Image 1 (spheres, rainbow, N blue to C red):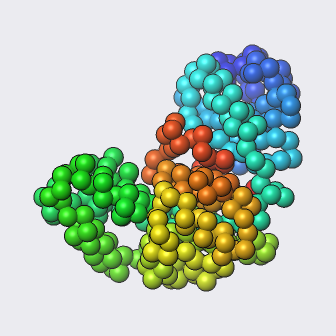
Image 2 (image 1 turned 30 degrees about the vertical axis):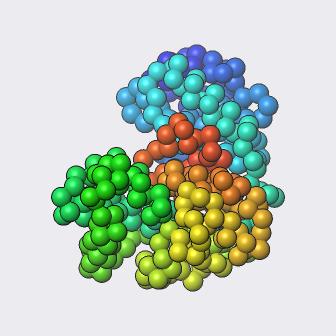
Length: 317
């Protein structure tokens, strides 16, 4: 499998320490880590790329980083041909070169809640569609996904475009809220992998953290308190506390203010395009941990750091 991605001899490539790889002019080595065979490619200007094996003829690009300055991630992505691998590596290098470093610059972290700290987005997706169906409208999965983190001011025009003025957004929203609340009262809410460990680690390091969620504070506490997460935050801001909700910057500007920091010294951890747009407009360092969908090409230029999961951020902060 590895032959198509570089020029090296046949056999078990990771048993030989170093080889010259025909990959973007870099040299590299093969390693085995956590039962995962990987190759490390060392490129000019101090960049390093990790590439690992998935299955068959596919591999993934994991990270691109500047030596001793781990500030840029490139999301895991399967590629099946050498030309695409080149493209993915070059794209990741470009993003790493233009990214702002985290250490020494970021002094506070602001978290979105739904899809970042709790596994609620799947429930929103399900119950938005069920509530629309109950009102006689068909909401596609793509349309439901586009509602993530939207304030009513942003969501209402979408409903009118999809269904006309006969669709009562507020009534459908209340039906969705009631359906979802009944489900959570019965089944509870799950935390996202690594949420507790990351927040606890930030507290131990003395890094102030805030919650910036479109949900009311009462609902945020209802979701987070049973998981032991709510009291970890130094500040909590909801969509009801600001004039304009996401994707406007208000909520991140307010959260940074409550932490006593300028937005430029805060990292914002988001999963949705609307949230990334909000944080970017506020001037925050944007960290995207995608939940239900990967970022589209139009949102990628606004993402300063792209990680696959929350636990990836432990090495950065």
